[in-house]
Image (cartoon, rainbow, N blue to C red; front, top):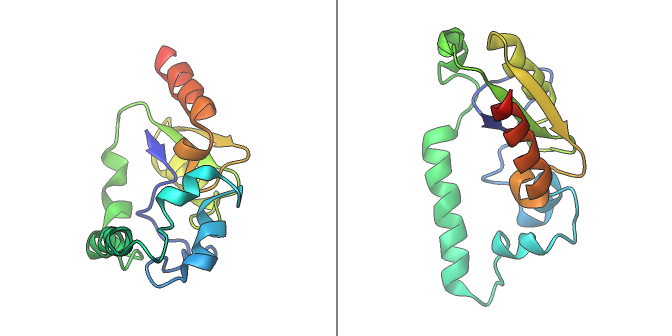
Length: 141
């Protein structure tokens, strides 16, 4: 199962460096609905110093392992994946566009893609029922 995954690079569809993107620009990139209540878990109140530190720490840790994305070697090894694979993606993902979903499907033999409407990069948080149904249906096959 891949859900709005990072790890590949497409020159025609670059992924923006989200670790240095101001939060006011990042939220619309990762959430389809700017009024989603879950945003509060990702955008700390500036007065809550501990929450601000937690978010920055999480982004820093992610950056240590994920950036720069263009070449971490996945493209050279992905052909080894032989398990049935569902590539689940938010249709409105403005951080990692759906072109990447199709690229993963192209590179993983037999992989299937499902695009979920009204979801961006935080698909399981934004559309938990649709995500769960897609996973259950895939596993049942």
